[in-house]
Length: 258
Image 1: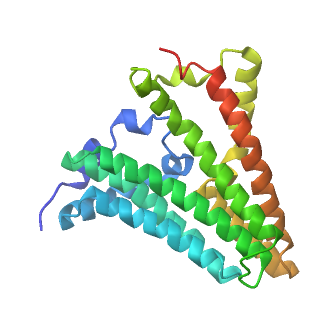
Image 2 (image 1 turned 60 degrees about the horizontal axis):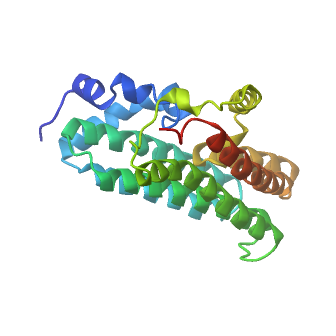
């Protein structure tokens, strides 16, 4: 069993341009997971795993977390949060492994994006089932969770369709970070405030799993499902707001400009 050194993995798998990405690099990835992921990448490289196998692992962790979430109670919430941490670790590691091995591919990028769609939609749906109680598959909270899941997928689709629209117009898919800022100073200020408050992260898998855990702790202390139900409704409201606000921000920015 041979492979790179840990220093080589960091140098090749985590180039500055990757760590500096505003849109694609997760906040908690920058905070701590990118310090841990080279260890996993080093192990996968020595085991000879292909990058897409690691991607499949992170998708599986996201779906497993959703499956655990529907069980209700504090212990499943802890398990789901831990599975999502593993999901984040593997999500960091698959790209590092691809860069180290030179096996980057369109298929890998596609699977990575689909993985985020699936994990976030599944976790929001699971939250609604959890909030309904007794593994119910119908009811107002189940509906709220499903609606939040659909809206969260739409938010991601809005982002990904920027690349689709640019490609259809014969433009390069990539655009500079400066293009994210809206042309209007008022909208630019609103975007900075929204980014600072980070409300949009409540419907993303990593933060959502932690919020589910906090709600489970409160519910365990107080009895009932009040905190989980409040979280479900909050996620629906946030997802609905984000569909409109994100679309407006994209159209008002320079992301669609030549």
